[in-house]
Length: 380
Image 1 (cartoon, rainbow, N blue to C red):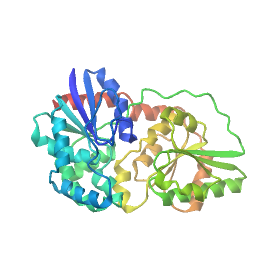
Image 2: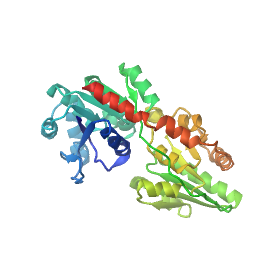
Image 3: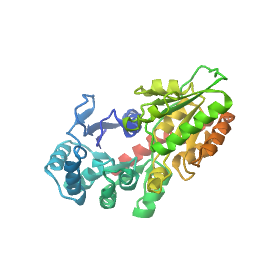
Image 4: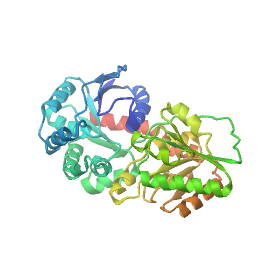
């Protein structure tokens, strides 16, 4: 049995990265790979097989956070990061598996010269230009973070990434070869047939809205389309981020927010919608993000098995998946007239038989477990 210490800058029950990792760990155990999850978080979540090693190194009050991050990202080891590193090296493992979100990059870079234990590096979002470049607080760190990110990747014995676009991007800018590993979905859920009300139009969305401006345009278009067709429109948002909650006040009759649901309950809710909405931002600063990231909500939508309205430039990973597997309609425009036309197109759209199963099998099948097993065992 190989012992793997998984290190993340987030708790095992928070975010898309955790969803992806949690889908793979049980299957890895069947491959004689035992994973102990070591994480940073504000508090211990007290979960079996998981070890809390301290609070995040990033975040907090603005002034303190800026000073702290300047030190961390230029390579000065603070007392806090030294304490975290000491706790990590005290864990006996055959492999350190580090997820490259925020502090994960720094920990991988600093850990490599401290230990002979090999490091495997997993990237779900590009930190310098996929995360920091879109952040008001951390935008100034992008250039420095790019250097640290490259150092961390080169120090690892192996790298896996979340999309073909990300693999090609890192090969081009860093000369790094990587495996593409997605979430593992063993099967799709089965639903009873749904009869939709011909006088209503219900749209579903889960998780983060990446740009309020684009989302607002879609809401306006949906409202206009429904009015023109004499339909009662409803947009169900599940887990809408608190910073975007103000948009509910702009569309009080349209948006119905459900603050929190388990994914199983969310999938059941979304399966009763006419279609679901996915977006990636159109701005130039978001290009790396949309071309390399792959939103975890896409796997939720595939499980819900409803047509997808992909509101995104055609260069995004979401557009690629929706187009390749014929899962819905792509709208790469930012006018309400174009959006209403795309909504009408999707309302008439006929899904091809087995399109969601084809996408699941090709992208989210057992091959992801096999590839991760190979990565981790080759690292030793």
